[in-house]
Length: 238
Image 1 (cartoon, rainbow, N blue to C red):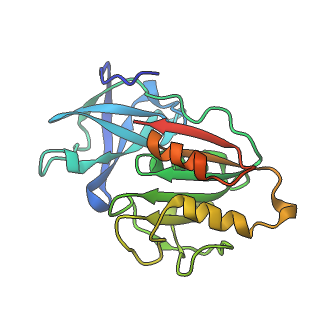
Image 2: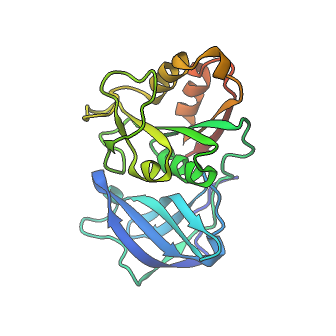
């Protein structure tokens, strides 16, 4: 599907919340698009031009969706105001497609972090067993927090996870290449994946698969680095 920034819909801004590194969490009342699936996104018409809203949650029955917007690309001091409306594009992308395996490791990099969180919440802890999130920038769009889950094979000191995943009962770990942050792996998501897989005993290696979202060049690298025997369903984002 070719991305288009045409904006035939209007969504009402329910809430706007600040996130680390200048990101914004925007919740929209938009029944026409509220049946979005993990990995889809849309464009908002904003001052300065269209900007992608990376969807992290959607509720078709209640008619709303929420996503992460890069506030650093907006005019200084501007943020969508609750109660106002925004012109929105159609849903972009096709999501992850068919997922194999009954035990999934969900990976998200940069723009794919929101899609990974969306997918893991939809799957639930019965199928989403581990979530690995990373960025090549300075910070992820949430505050890392100490995880209550012990994950075998993790590098020393890699104890931070995502709060939404903690609440959902899903283990997670974080990788940041741009700068060191306490509790986060200073390196790549692929390094965390390989370290974890090496700790999985032979008797437990059946039924595992990967679902990954991120820029196409990152996914190409992951395809080459992933451990043999782990099938990969990917969601390529622009």
